Length: 620
Image 1 (cartoon, helix red, strand yellow):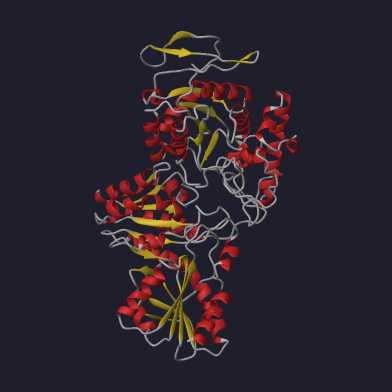
Image 2: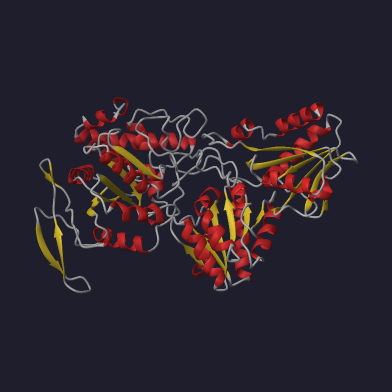
């Protein structure tokens, strides 16, 4: 069936029996493909019928489909002519998120959550201003992403228009973990309410439900010759905002989905369609998984769902262990997560101290400012978050945490190059941004011992924000210092009078050691060094490099605005005459590829750094 689909029009030509067969085939393809490459499996298995319905009711690309966050767009790709998933999320293959260069059916590439409603409202307003009143903008947003502040700003804005916006809430009760908060309780109440039954035609009925008698309006839509589940309108939060509400709809009943979407499309103004789906639908290991391991997977055995290669001990695990140990010693320690309890390593702490973990939903700005409030109240909050997502809360770090002297610790997971998730997920901006925040201190540990030490030192600071950044993946071998100059740890020395100092920040310390060895093989006296606390400028830096001719800095952040530049400026101001060579990530959006491929392309491998250093020495 799938071979017959090259564009959305082909989907609209199928009958119900063919659609059922196609949905089954799509699930088989997803499991087979993603098990080979890794990727977001559970979310896509849950939106098969919903995506089929979207492409049958709306005319993409004339009607615009915006997926929030985009990790559930695999089915959309299959239905729009992109069926080669053999290199998914690899260089030269399909991106794991929508990408404009792949298809005219893709619009929004930013895979940060809670943005789709703002995109859709802007697009719909643009269509209206151009007089294109037959075009609709559709935002597909999960109940998890709907917890984000931007989504509610957009709801407030769109309710004041009559633009053709259809908001599809894909409600599976989860993001990375069960969705929490007042919105989740409200949606769960709708999802489980026995009053949502099948009726035919319009009418009113009064219900008694542990409270005052209330009246609800209901309707059942005829789809062909079939009466599908009642679409009930009830005075509630969405209608209080001025939005028409349709639902709840069984997201795995294609006829119901089509009927609801058609109803919303034909209304001609802002409509919210509430669709109930099951994450991992049709794949037994995912359906039975309570830990949501199948939200995003590496390579797995498709029969069992077990990893092909078990994960090595990782940086996140180091933090998880140290946070739990510190929590047993200090009752003022509080963990904060933005809907990612397990991925950032807070699950063990939450199990031991459930009252001291706060999941704010996908709301990083709120997380930071509420952390400042917790600090004011005498607690020490630890906000564990992916480095790329802290970008969204820079203003709050600057003016709520730092300005107010708040003792908040930020644990930046997935810092630096992450690779296969594409440009919006590389944690490459944090050092360039955060080094401008007064009083803030940044640690970039190089191994597990320095990671544990950095965390303990960070949570000991109670009058300023602290940051500990660390990469995705396994922890390398320990890199003990041979000796130290102030806060600078010398990891390797070749010769007695170093002509070159190679300084590696965080996990790039290993690269510095390897590069120094290659430089030394050319007969050059050289040392390799690192520091755990990298901002402000480490004590001992000037003393370490004052007699060198060249200093090389290596960081997995921006090369031309990062900490290497900061170190060089400080050394020059102190009278150091050495010339500096800064190696880091280029200031551009890095397309999806493996971390190793991006490191090589950016000239961040040891051989490239050694070659560049030797060339600079020859040209000097």
